[in-house]
Length: 178
Image (cartoon, rainbow, N blue to C red; front, side, top):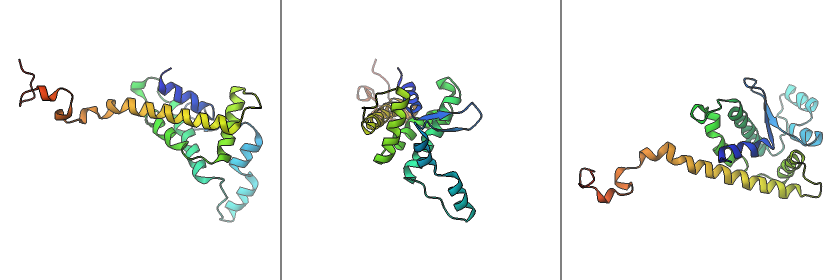
């Protein structure tokens, strides 16, 4: 499987995307308790906002990072289907994914582990943290391979000729000797 497709498949274990054009996306919670912990109790948050107070967000940096991951995932899967027509979300997904899963706290990893266990139908005995850490490693490795493999496609033209392989065998005008 190609790395870009693998990355989409990995992210789909924890994120969902709505219908094309709907701009809806989110995390695939394994249970209502996780969703309530992550999203916060609606009525309490509404009261805080009405009073002009900022509702508490658990692990705010992780919350933002995973929201970005779900958003870019949604853009990548609902955008154009061919790589040549890929939208900005599809092109940026590897970088967003690489950053999003970096340094997640254990509470968040446990929640992600429960999601993955649920969608892969893993046995209850399997450790949520172990599953989540393996998923994070796989996401980062796949995103990294994608970023590196596409680096030359975007920036290879910027390598000065004098640094390109075989340059030393050319004459002063850059031509191959006859």
